[in-house]
Each structure stands twice: as structure tokens, then as C-alpha cells.
Image (cartoon, rainbow, N blue to C red; front, side):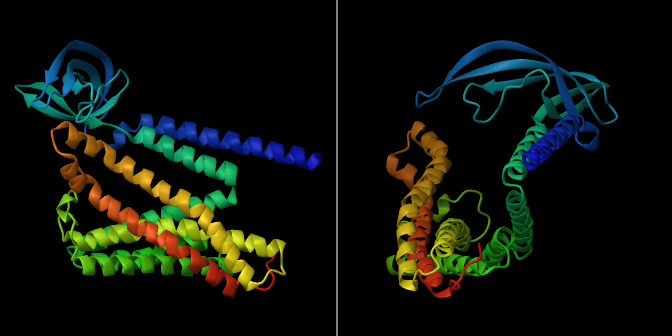
Length: 371
């Protein structure tokens, strides 16, 4: 009973510390305008004007509203200067947004005959971003403790590695994009599994399964591309591509498939380790069958998760295409076709990872697994 009370007391202190740190971060980002070089205006009053109805050639209806924003500058040599700026926003919010009292906005200053005016550039978003980051990290630390810390460190490490890979790709003008991100995939998997699982045999088996399943999926895709001569591959639909689209598409597919295969491999192999721990007498053949049963159970939901992510990513732009008079075929080709191919390749990796994980676990599991 005394140990339980001490644990509860420590837990409450940890919660209090996390809340205090979060409050300080939010307060700091709300008052850090002096750290920015670009002028920032805080809105103190908003005046709404008349709303007008707009209709385009395809009978799409939207409503445009003008508003006058009154505020003062929070930084630069003109700090404290009162300004009035106009803003126009639509009900759809596709290309603009509505501002409220208390909003902090990046503005562009204009000097005309000694008079200072401004136009709105964008909203200052560091406070909500810091809040979301604090919420994620706080929940990871409070609910998962050391495991949550390792998960956060793996994400942070992968983020740094991904940034370095992008910089390296830019310095080579995209000539080695597939080699760069292919190597990055190996490093991603190794760093993530090492931080989450540690230097264990389970980590080695999971890593081998992840890399093997991903490689097999990419090889199958390349064979299919060669046989079909890549018919139906609309690389021109890839947005904002300033380098060769084909290797960039393969690099995207490689990273996407890696995440899906790693997720499934971790689930299967961790379950098989737990099974071996509970039943030390289980044979390699029984381990292989158990791995296939576990894989068949989680394979379907995981593939559906990939499909839902794909739909969520393409739905807004596809709807925009359809609302502007484009056919279903053209909309699919320009928005969904490449995503469908990526989802299929990831699905192939998920399917192939099941027997691979089961086989490697049946061969490499130790005779005894420590509790």
C-alpha cells in the first residue's frame, strides 16, 4: 500500500511538471514576436463588411467577405504602431482564411509619403504547433514512460536524417535520389528498431523482415513495370516535381512501403516472442504456423489503413477536379492513379512480410526467451 501511494505521488508530480512546462511553452510562443525578423501584427479589433455571393462557370457557389483588421505591431523598429489592414476570406477557405481578435499575423509593411500601411502575409502558427508537439510528447512520456521516450527519440532522429537526405539530394540535383533514399530506408529501419527494441535478437529479426519484405515489394513492382512498359503511370500528375519523376516516385514508394512492412513485422515477431516465452516447448513448425495466423489477422486491417490514408490524401483535390467539370477518368488519372499504385506496392510488401517474418522467427528464435 505504501509503495502504491509513493507511485501515485510521483505520478502526480510528473503530471504537474508536464503541465507546467506546457504552459510555459505556450506563454513563451505567444510572446516571442521580438525573436522574428518579419513584422508581426496582433489583431485587437475586427470589423466585418458585406458578404457577396460568387458563382463560377460550373455553378460552384462561394461567399466572399471583407473584413478590416485593427492592430499594433509587436516587433521591429515600428513596434507599437497602430495599423489597419483589409482581408478578404471565402466561406470555403480554400485559398484564404478568416482572422479574429488576438490573431498574430505576419505582415508586409509599405511606406507611402511618411504613412505606414500593411498587407497580411500569413498567420503566426508557432503556438498551436508547440502545443501539439507538447501534447504528443507529454502523453508519450506520461502513458508509456521509457518506451514513449524511445519512440519520440526515434521520430526525432528520423526527422533529422530525412532533412539531411533532402539536403544531400538537393546538392546532387536529384541525380542520386533513389540511392540516397534507399540507403535512408535502411538507416530509418535500423535506428527506429534499435531505439524501440534495443540491441536484441528480436530487433535483428524484425529488421531483416522489414528490409526483406520492402525489397521484395519493390522488385515485384519493377518487374511489373517492365512487363507492362509502365502503361497507366501518369508521372506528370506528381505535383511540384522539379527533377526526374520516376526515381522520385520509387523513392516515395520505398519509404511508404517500409513503414507498413515495419509495422506488421514488429507485431508478428513480438507476438511470436511472447508465445515462445509462454510456451518454451513450441516447435519451429508451430511458430511458423502461428506467425502466419497472426499475419493473416492483422494484414487486412493494415491494408485498409493504407487505403484510408490514401483516400484522405487525395479526396480534397479529386473533389476540386470534379467540381470544375473534369471527368471521373481524368480525375482518377491526375489525382489517384499514382497513389493507388503506391498502395498496391505497399500491400504486396505487407502480404510478403507474413511468411518471411514467420520463417525467420521460426529459425532464429532462441530456445529460451527471457521474461
